[in-house]
Length: 280
Image (cartoon, rainbow, N blue to C red; front, side, top):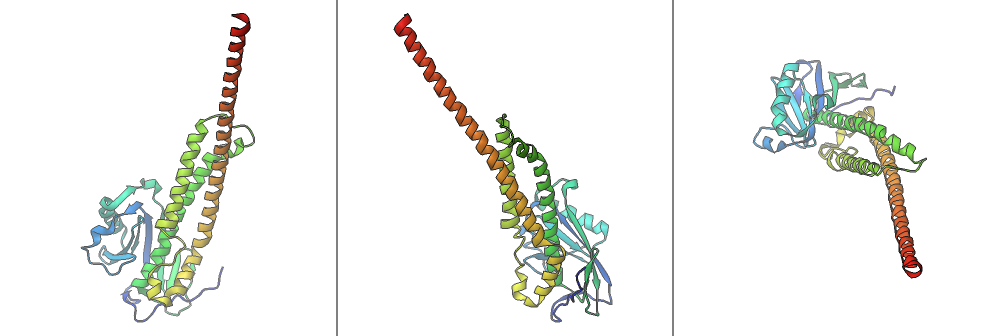
């Protein structure tokens, strides 16, 4: 266990909750689908942008990300269901219910400044807009990583027979279609986690609030964002390398068969010529 470090915020930041009003705050991140159309929130009063933070429920807040994640703070379970239901028309390529990754956390006040993170609890000196945005950013990245970690694990199971088949001569051309599909899925995952989600990039709000960087780094380290991203990249690279190797072997075997067909046709043509020459 790492030594606890203080997670403090600037006194000038906008406070959303005070220690006198609440001692703890429940948060939950949900990966809803491939994209979340936030343009419809242009006419909605928001408390902050990049990432977008809006009011939700009676006394709660929601941080919404265009790559399909919603992070809710301070909502009752019934309010969470109602808010997520309202978001459904904005979700593009919504995941099935059982495929929606979630991550729960409990934020607690820590006026002593000793602050720590353990067992799904984060102790903070204050609950500000910027702090909720930072926590939401890390939780959102965590659920996205979890989603693609599970997806990559399933791809590993599917591609294992092909890796074993490298010890033998690939016999089925059906392999080619399956492997091309796997390569496509790999490229899609890499595009999403690097291009769209920007997993290892720091949030833009740190440029305006550099004092919060230590808070973010502490959260990022606790959820092992960089380590998980690196591990996922390695797995994707291994899958791609395996698929490409088997495809090359299939292509080589196909080329070899074509060459034999050509040789056979030449032999047949020679035999027919000899037949015409000596027999006919």
